[in-house]
Image 1: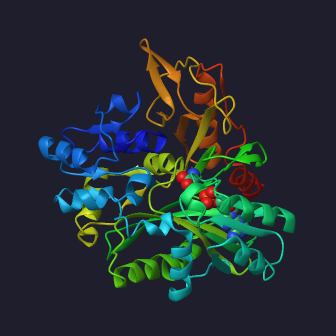
Image 2: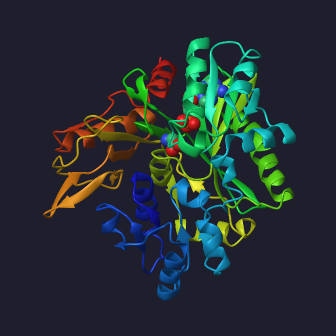
Length: 422
Ligand code: AMP
Ligand code: GLY
């Protein structure tokens, strides 16, 4: 298991429950992951040392959590050494690593998405702006840790964003810029597993990206999520599979870069139907936490069947009908400069919930905060409202004076459940 956030804690927690998992190693991991895995110190940028470690330990499956090592080709290096790996090749990870690549693929395959232009210099970008109405979306082409998207309400903001990106604020990620039509609607996330040929749906979720209640304030990596997202009805899920996911998997295979791993589609449910906002080449964080809380059965066997190209030989993965909800507890200051070092005491949790750790560390044997998003407090219930009540009961039992969370995670769905109950 490679990575060390809340997503990876949820994966490690579930992997460790598999009968086929005799030993689990994690790099870099975190103190929560250490409850399920032996932590090892590996530099993920040094592919030869990761391969050597896997060979020495006879590792039967490597699960890569975050996008950066995927875009960097770590899965290619492991595959070249015949080590089964869950995660796409560098070429396939361009679906997340280059927004322009994905937009061109959508255009070629007829996948519904926002109108766009790709620009490699500021002068062209400024001219192209004229073709768009306001608000307009300006994106750095490459990975920018979720910060490379500006929704410009005015022409001046759009011009400033273009100047900023070509001026180097996002490093190499901003060497190319995509200008996009602004889409209106409710957002939802959809997940599919594919081994390059076969595809299965793997559930939906809704994230809360803004730091403040009522979806206000700056964007974050995600302050909470729930699954399933009922706005993505079974009919819409079938439409997304037919019009986006399957054509994408087929187009990637046809280009000689088959996509193997989880394909995470960020969707806008517009008046004209679902449109693709973006793809990610890995599980969402914190969406993964709610998916793992709902997953029934053996995660090792499932991810290994993806890694080995035999997803068709097994039954479809099952997610419990019971929803799950996760509340992120962040360190004061996040998403700016989070305060590090705050002491944390966690309560015991039962079968219906788990506290996944993200930015935590041990200092003299005590658990302390060591990052922006610190905990991901996750519960299952017989409704989103029930899961929310369970998650906040656990949040309230956490002793972490320097932390904060949003109190309204799941609000759209909870309002729908309340309306349906009348
Ligand atoms: P990310 O790339 O995950 O940082 O996402 C940026 C966020 O910007 C998305 O979750 C959407 O809320 C928003 N966004 C991106 N593209 C568009 C678009 N074309 N229209 C409207 N909102 C967008
Ligand atoms: N929570 C959004 C993401 O993982 O990209």
